[in-house]
Amino acid sequence: MERSFYILCFAIFVLVATSLIYGLKFLRKGNYLLGIEWLVVTFSGTNFLLYALGGSQASYRISFFCDAFSRGFGIPVIAVAGLMAVTHRYKPSILVDVVFFALAIAGTVVLMAADFMIQPKPYFYVVMWSAFSVYLAYFAKRLLSAGEGLHAFGVLMVLLTSQAIASIYDFYKIPGDDEHIVFYILAAFTWSFVCVELYHAYGALERAEDGDELLAAVPAR
Image (cartoon, rainbow, N blue to C red; front, side, top):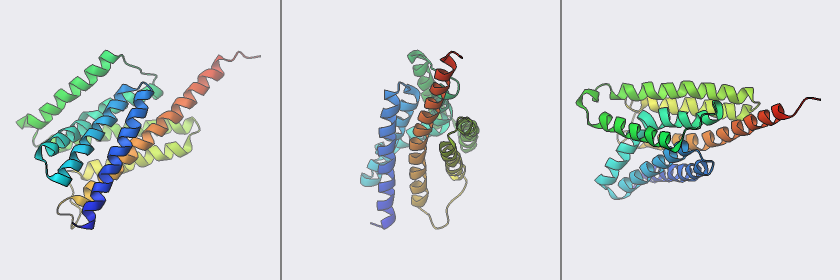
């Protein structure tokens, strides 16, 4: 097998590991929106790895559906709602969490099955991810205002790299990358970076916001 195939498998393994670790960390924080969405990425990556290693078409279809879920709704809608826990103190009930995922699954089914979505689907993905990038810019600004310059920079890197991947996914072919292996390697490492950096940036802003609340609660002398 070519070296690029082994690099691809390694990249997917890194994605599976990082999304699993940080998905479980989000669940322990009580943020089910981010935790479960990260685990959807884990499930997608695991099935893609099984497809790459064994050629399982069932695994490919599962991964393809999960990828559409995350690109169309999981990251742009569910992840944003989860991140709003530290930017807007938004903490939905379990029922609302379930509704978020149910609607996202229904939306993904429409994306995958409806004939009228065949042509606009690539543009839909880019528009949704661009909306996510706008929120990331706001998130970075909040981090910078809280004195977390390093994480603000990290989130800006998440914005730039993930927006680049989202923008070229359906519209640009890397020269010489006939089987899209190079693209999938870049995409896997980028999504791994998204999973790791957004967890740590979330924690940094959470600590900063909690510190401000403590200071506000201390009576002035």
